[in-house]
Amino acid sequence: MLPRPLLTKTFGLTYRKIPVVAIGKDIYCDTSLIIEALEHFFPTKEGYGSVYPPIQGWNYKGLARGFASFWIDRPFFRTTTGLIPPSVWTSPFGTDRGQLIGHPLDPAKLAAKIPQNLGAFETHLSLLEPTLCSTDKWLFPTETPSLADVAFYYQLKWGTDIAKGKGVYDLTGGSVGEDGQDVAQVVFNEHRYPGVWRWFHRFEAHVASLPDLQTEIEPEDTTWKSAIREIQGKRGLGLVPPATAPNDELDGKRGIVEGALVSVVPDDTGRGNPTLGRLVEVGVEEVVIRPEEKGEVDVDVHFPRVGFVVKRVEGSKL
Image 1 (spheres, rainbow, N blue to C red):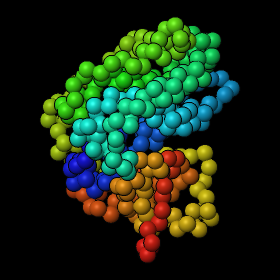
Image 2: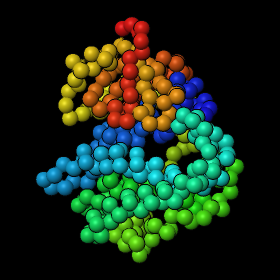
Image 3: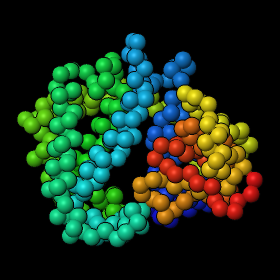
């Protein structure tokens, strides 16, 4: 929720959504790009894990990314948010989300739409049931969960929890109590979707079996000021390598070239809070800008091109 002085004052970052991740002086926006940055800069050859467990003879990475970005983060997310208890929309959080979406939210209308959203929820699970009913593994034939499983699990878990009011106290900053009805259970239960149900609990068991990799860090090393000192003087990491070279001809026609002043906004919600900056690098899947709004430290801000609109600001000079 706005205001977010930690991000705006420190980094000059007016981007409205979460999450964001800092790796040195590079700030990555949106889960889809964050995952690719973590995969690239913390590779398996150096002992790190991966959300793309290998399948012999098949590089399914693009399909998993598309599943997460175009299915789970879009229509499925809209469905699960449609199960939020109507009392949430009467809180300051509801007002904030009206600004994020671009119009005021009517709690009564949203309450009346819950049955419709439950119907959509049913359809999504029905589409995935045949796949999950035919395996004792994962959405893709991997030995461990992939990005597809992670994306579907967290959204399904969050949606079923929020539908019964779990988490709304924190969500609304204490304005609404956790006393909702479990409206999602009429759809998501062991009898209607046994395949999804078994997969859901198999995923939870897998996560519970993983070793705890958290390491102890000296308290003085975890302060915000020490983190900022770490960033000072760092060099930019550049683009996460895509499958192909930039299309200079196509981007050039739109003025999407290094040095141009551009506006970057999500293509769904949060369009009222554009991020303005100078293009540092332009790739097929990612752009890097230096924010026009100066913060305490100079950073490179990375946005994915999927799900975002990059436009040259009229009248800007190179």
